[in-house]
Length: 86
Image (cartoon, rainbow, N blue to C red; front, side, top):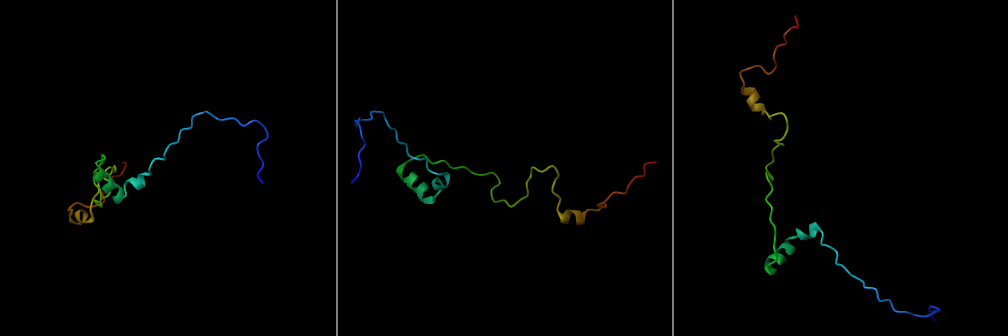
């Protein structure tokens, strides 16, 4: 038999606010969720990534990229002769 709280039982009149958890970003990118949003008329944001899937090395590097073919075709020697300090 459950025991009851010994004493006066009072009501709690404080407000309680319940919030739904925000959807995860991975769930928002799901194709089913995107199609559902498009059908319901909800705003959908599309972002085109710059140089996406271009399979190039980073162009922001300090040194310019030189291909091996250009080095082979070059008429100048790859290494310069050292100048003596005299």
